Image: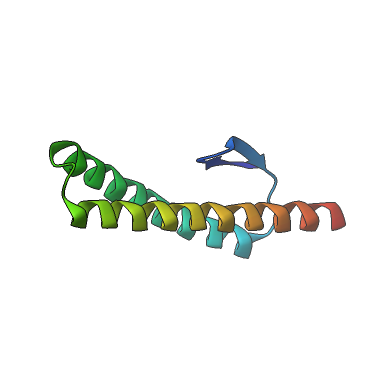
Length: 87
């Protein structure tokens, strides 16, 4: 079992006997953390200069990427649940 944190769903506990699936999840989690860190940096700059169009563009892109990553997490969890039921 391991926990997955979603921006929209909170913490979800996931059973996992599939090593390949877990490896993919770990890589995605690391990438997601880097994106969150970038998003935080953009937000801090945005707070200082709300008229900065470049920061607004970057912030929008990062939000889209984070949402995409969370969809990927959801797919991994669903596959993990299906694999767990088959076992």
